Length: 74
Image (cartoon, rainbow, N blue to C red; front, side, top):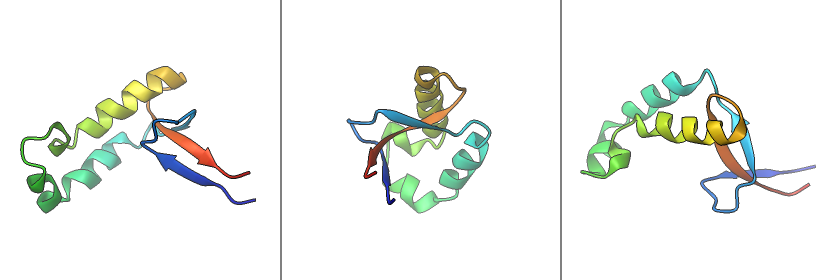
């Protein structure tokens, strides 16, 4: 059975618990200096937006941090 998990979907009805991985996620994004500079003054230019987004989703999912996903396939 194959499935595709898509984050950022407006049709997301599932969540993946990422508690314990937020520091790594922020560090990983922070390492992409050219990408972040290219965003200019956009709020997503601050790697900490990942933490805020995951904590907000986690609150809705009943865990400390989560990523909202839409599941396609069986």
